[in-house]
Length: 469
Image 1 (cartoon, rainbow, N blue to C red):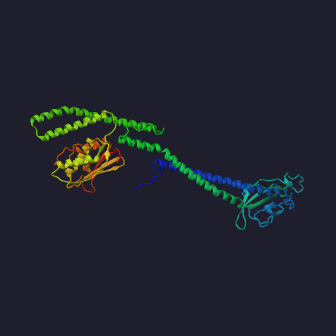
Image 2 (cartoon, rainbow, N blue to C red):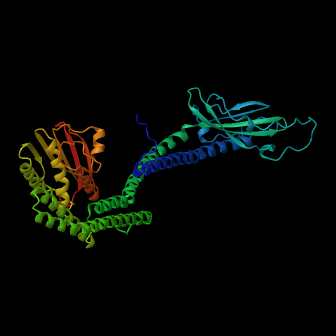
Image 3 (tube, rainbow, N blue to C red):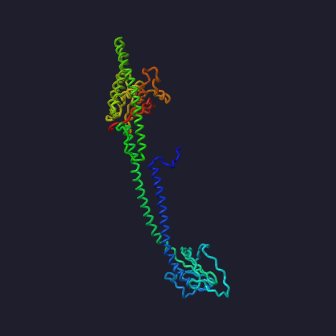
């Protein structure tokens, strides 16, 4: 069961997720903040109108806590009967209302109501505190209320201290004066934020595509190095990738040096064997040895010349690989095997593109394909199949037969040099191991398995492609 990954593997997906999350949080914060500022701005206008009515009423409060109706002037909104604008004055002398609407229940924080001043003696002749009407103004604080229909109301309240006690003045207005313009402003605000979010998302996608482009170019450059069209990854890279490219080029040079060193050893060995082989060939000819023995010596001599030629090509320092057509090589090998195994006629199914070329030396391709075809021909009962396709930058070569095949354990043994699984057959057990080594040397691979179509052994050889397919 695969566990859900919270962190995606793709750098593009990670950066896109981070950008989307941060953009969403920023837009949410901006929407809430702007909405709060708009609400405060609109509410301030309503508060100023209510505070003006409270100030008028505060000047009409007498020193005994009663209200002077002649001085209690109603502002325009408060003088309309049946409107949601009203005021109320409550104190020691009773309750006074504007009369426009029934008195609602006002809710306000208890902590904002100051305690009443201590009562003054009746014979106290001290002057009243300074302020409008001979009283002391208190701080105005907001409150909320609802009328009988359930509509929200907004209130402003002032507590005024008089010699006879505290007088509370309240002015009330409809909350819709704040909510309606706020709603009208929020809708275009949300639309603007949505457009801004879409623009930021598009900009993020463009930024990620452009910012990650050097990684795609680096992958293309590495594929070119692997295919043999370039020797190194271009050094002109962004600063973040420069150390990586430097290490990659150093690794490529190190591998090339190791390969050159190994091939030099092969060349030295071939040079060491060349003279003894020539002497042996002359001795066998003088001794009248049979043709089979002389042919085996000639095969050894040809392989020695082949590796000497490869060593000379490496020493030339061209850095370019040969381009070898697959179809002619397969056709020639099948024709040769038909003559060699004339006693075992097989049905050969070949599906090879005529224009497919691989970045492999012709002799290496002949040796790899010859080993695999010869192995399949010797073990097949009646049929053998050769299928070649282009898979990305690699050529996929599949050779399967209808022979007995190999088990998984036998496959591992068959790859060992000198290991023969069928002692009754001719051969020396080096064919598959040499083929695998040559494939890996040229940037490919060899895998063995069971053929799903024919039931015998399936050999899957992959080699790098050069040129158009």
